[in-house]
Length: 412
Image 1 (cartoon, helix red, strand yellow):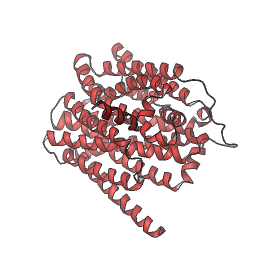
Image 2 (cartoon, rainbow, N blue to C red):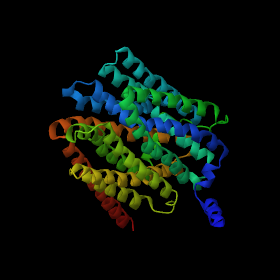
Image 3 (cartoon, rainbow, N blue to C red):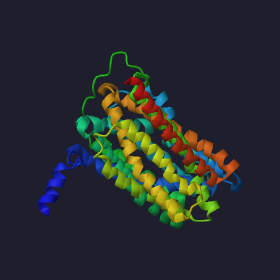
Image 4 (cartoon, rainbow, N blue to C red):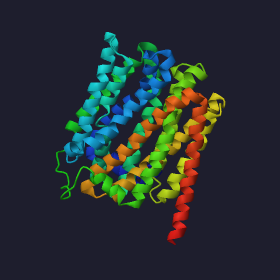
């Protein structure tokens, strides 16, 4: 038995990632911050529900969720000249420091009685201005530290940490909300970003980044995507996928609180189930290195929509939560395969700009869909919005698979 265990460890695709000296210093801080993010998934929408007027809760939940991501796309578009040549570790640290500061102001204002819904949304937006660059920094650093064959496994490790945070973060958030309110959870999240900032400021050896291309502009990342059909097609699929999923962030909390008359604990259960599935999906992802990207990604999108259908159809809670768990299983392979393709296809000297451009487009998709969630819920109801989102995602996956198959036949 020990020999078999040793052989499994040696042949695991994750061994080079987990034994890398620099990554071993960074992963604990990344884990702490991810746990805070897992708690914030519940707290951001729940605090909006707590402080918004009852008649306007749908709108403010949508605005809060959108603000927490939308400004990252703006930062990616407007701050390229300032940030595109920064070392990737500094990008991560600066993003974390800004998030700690802006998020930390929310519980302070709440305690002082000055937290209006407008100020809340503004602070959420400020906290994420550098987030696209922070994400680009993480995956650029990973691509530089690991050989190409280990990129997918490295992405899966980070995805797995994020998935674990959605398992443990929401229950912790639910308990803290019962004890001290949603603002307390956001205070804890802010503290975890201080840990992440310190980790990347001091845990990465100073190294000169690859020299930028002569004449590279702030639009260089978009240019790489535009001239690479595989990247352009995958980004278009991701944009549509994330946009159609966006209304779930508005509809699910309101479906739980109003449609089912349940407390924050049930909302946490949905996210926890998603996280449990995502942990299993992250473990499997490292073994998918040889599978073709398009059939896998389009199949994931179609299946993801199918497994969200029970919630939209008003199925018993156990079936709805189980559907979220299976959807969670599918999420890490999609995210990790997509990122690995960008890491391999983009020139190393333009990888931060390319990843930031990709992140800007993907990040824009989620709040766009989230912003649409408010009017959809107001016009059709929370459960009906969940049903429309699930069905649309499934149709998108099938349509993308059909288009890819037709394209392959034309090229033969």
